[in-house]
Amino acid sequence: MTITLNWGILGAGNISGQFVHDLLVNNVDPEGSIKHTIISVGSSSASKGEDFIKSNGIKTSNNNGVEAITEEYDDFYKNGKIDIVYVGTPHTFHKEQVTQSLENGKHVLVEKPITLNAKDARELIELAKSKNKFLMEGVWTRFFPSVKLIREHIFEKKTLGEVYKLFADFSMNFEVEKLPTSLRGRDIKLGAGATLDIGIYSVTYGRILLDDKLGENSTPFDTKSFLSLDPTDKVDHDSTILIKYENGKQGILTSSNHTNGPDSFVRLEGTEAVLEMWSDNPARPKNFKITFTDKSKSPIVFEEKNDYNGFIYEANSIAKEINEGKIESSVLPWSETLLVMGIMDKARLENGLIYPQEK
Ligand SMILES: NC(=O)c1ccc[n+]([C@@H]2O[C@H](COP(=O)([O-])OP(=O)(O)OC[C@H]3O[C@@H](n4cnc5c(N)ncnc54)[C@H](OP(=O)(O)O)[C@@H]3O)[C@@H](O)[C@H]2O)c1
Image (cartoon, protein in one colour):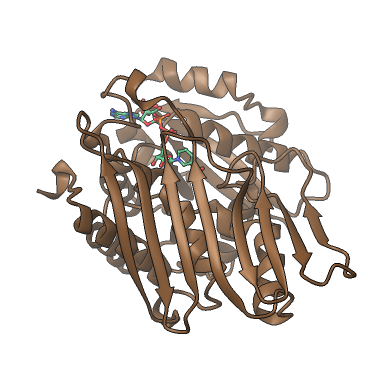
């Protein structure tokens, strides 16, 4: 049986283009049992939406015979052919746009972070429940094949022995001081800051590699943090969150806009082996290596090679869950999103980073 999901893409920008790329590659795979059709691109301007369709190569030949259109936001929300909205705009717009999408009877996949804080996320979750519509935060990292395999090694096969410590980093030098403060990466009014933008991935590794449970069932933990706030734009471009679980496991979860991180963005230390993960982008964990203390044992290496950016894994998972009538992801349930948002809320509170929308 083929499952088809009809998408509306909200925001004709950077990440929407990367997301759409994967849907189109998937659609021309003759083996694929899940098809994703792009119905409409919602954009602040028709010409921007048309450019998006053209520059991302959306054609009837790779879009299941459907010609994608572009619409301004109000028409987009009312478009009855859209099953699910992908929200690919800066964080500060997520709450309003997810609300509009749910109110108009659409399922929603919203880019990370779901909102600026846990309080707003909770409101959206309540709305999704009341509308009986699927809602998920797009932390695509959790859906990669490597993550499933790694978690089997850590928690089921115990390949690393007892795990004690994690170093996870997402750092990328985007030469902060040279950029205007009006950009998404610097503008406090757009929710800028390393923690919400990239630190969320380090925190994600702190959750998926140190705990085998999710959300409300998670192993109890405590966190402490240090964020360095920029004197000009007032947001954090360097962020360190320390996590300690009740069972003693510890994680050092860092992010920076000032420096480039190590090739191995994850190093997980166990009594019998060390896991390292690498890729061109710590958000997309394509490869890993497990090296044993006992040098007579060969390392375990996994490398993913294909044309996908990696968004296809979350998209296919969502298509299956919606097809089964679910409104909450089993991989990233609402309580897990709230738990991660809570960790980041606490870090911001400890370091005095409050967004204007929260005052
Ligand atoms: N999953 C990932 O790895 C990943 C990577 C990067 C970003 N993200 C997330 O994706 C979201 C968007 O990031 P991005 O880099 O794609 O952003 P972007 O390219 O700067 O903006 C995306 C779109 O948002 C709308 N927009 C941007 N600035 C706006 C403003 N000031 N006022 C109103 N609308 C505005 C525009 O849509 P119109 O077409 O309507 O004009 C724009 O095309 C963020 O929440 C970010 O955290 C995720």
